[in-house]
Length: 357
Length: 140
Image 1 (cartoon, rainbow over the protein chains, first blue to last red):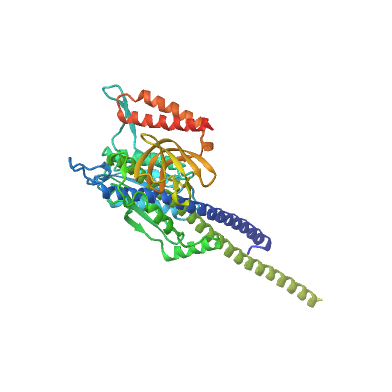
Image 2: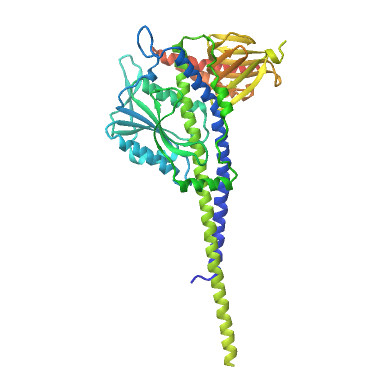
């Protein structure tokens, strides 16, 4: 049996670990709060873009009356033969099963559609590393056409699934500009028919207890203002309870923030019941607004995913702290027993020594 | 002059946050086809924004205010103006060096664009944005 000194040393080490996990939990809680504020701050813009698009579609037909063409290629649906999925995971570990769950959902999506070709756009370092281990990276080669201009041409696929891009550090400092560039890239691939649909796999986050893993369709846009969720996975009751416990002990509210008033206000954008003078023709407005809309959807998904990551880390660190406390208790008990046994033994020795005299 | 009953409510919103929500006597906007000034009672209008300065005249929170915005949309109603900007900065926040680099890059792209219309537009976009930023920064 271990002696008192060993046990004391072990207790001290566990106490140190507990202090670290506790600090990490508080840091995550602070970051979570900031991430939540950011998602809230981004809401008015997204709501306004959505409402103005909605009102535009109501005022002008999506189809051109004279030619019968669609006003914008992003509304066009094609049979899904080549699909892009944007997998949003975290940049760092220590977040419980957060990253594993995201990639699992992505793998399930890929497995569920074995006959189509899939391009993967990985956001977040952890998910990228996991995906890279399984799937090859798409390669491009430079070609010169007859006019002498150089173009990037994609080489033949190495497999059904290829990774077309990764975006390290995008989530650390979430900037609307970079997200917009990515959105434009995805849109241009869709318009040039390199892909027939685009999905985002991410962790939706309304509040600590209301979150789920979703697969959401980004393109084509079928109906504006309605998220097109094609698959969702809710956390178990036990997971929710743990998250709630972690949130409460870190001083984070469980309710969703009240945004009704702000949303109502935002919905008025571009929808007043008057005849607007449109400075640009409808097509032009559509061309400008749709990329913004797609970009706002992506930004929203990323902001929520960042919040979810911090929440997951907070929960994981809360459990770790609790486990450390339990361990300390059991070690302390054991140490006291050992100490007691040593004392008893000494007394017996003294008593029997005295009796022998 | 404007009182509570006939002043404009002006909001500037970027993808990341709401920059201001205030009232003012008038607001100058860089629409895509040139600057325009909106006063109380303007006809309802939807327009695309270009790159340039948004100027608030007689704003309730501290007089005139200038923001550099690039691309977006604006909705004008008789008593309300809402600006949705892709990017909005205070003049003090502009990184002159970065804007200069952006301008150089834009000009390089413009020269290399060849026959591609898409590339020309993109390069012109970049140049316009950088020039507007530099102009705002130098003015200060």
